[in-house]
Image (cartoon, rainbow, N blue to C red; front, side):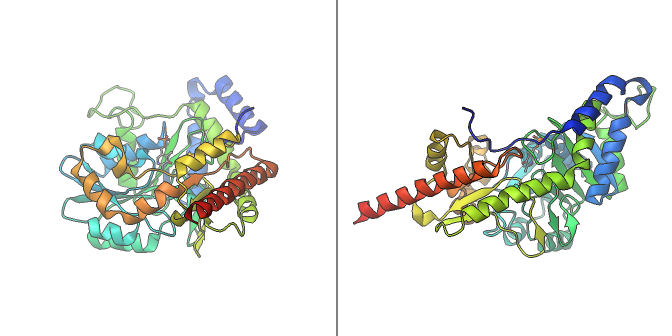
Length: 384
Ligand SMILES: *Cc1c(COP(=O)(O)O)cnc(C)c1O
């Protein structure tokens, strides 16, 4: 039997109809029909002026850094706990990542740690809306404004989340999204960059098309740049999904509420927070165990897997990864980022694919209860 899936999409006849139309009709003069509609609908949903559909969120972050002129000798601050795609593009442009600690409640960038990491080389900050939650954005934006540091908001995991009544992705100089198959809305693979800054928008349009200005038909490239475009089939799928945004986000929130109800009164386990003023879209239902329990994410994940339950470990701090082992920054961050290193070993993402049923969630919670109760009893016995 297939394990209960941790992530996955919700596809309806609407998506199938739009993609079928795209593959049938969107050629010749109709080639860009779905791009235009998708970008417009997306920008409207986020409340941003401009949106550019791209092949991935990774490419969106790469273009954002390029458009902000980040390069060799510059530093970019990024939270230590996130998917590596938030940080890898810093290397693409030849700059240095600087790993800031996370906040204990939101698991997102800590404003205090961000402020501590700023120096004269700081050229940008990448703020990540981790697992659908929002950071203490007012404080972060105020610090960034005071130091004149451009903000890239990585909202890949926060499609449909809100902070102070505004949609995630709309807070930085640019906001970026992922439509990977695991995300709340999907185009299979894909991404989006949104911005209110016309200059950045126009720069991104040139950078993503081999240095051509939009509409160029003379193949007269102004510079060596990149080729980052989405196909019309993906754009058609994306349009159908964004038209169902509230349905998708509503299901994510419902799945979270099933967990919250079923895990009530289970001591030592806390789930994602939703601070006042935030609407969390709960991309990943995440349980963090009290470190005092002594149960690590790897062991818990293996035990759940044996019971047919797929999980993912809470992201490891970037500064702990072999990928960044050569950086002295990693050594410093390992000693400095106490909250990242306290939470990450004890966190796990539970099945919250858009296909999971309430019965499946209740099964997962019962198994989780059994494992934790048995583990705690064992430890007590051992200690006695
Ligand atoms: C998924 C994800 C990305 C990368 O998205 P791709 O579309 O796979 O490039 C970037 N940042 C975060 C926080 C993500 O979760």
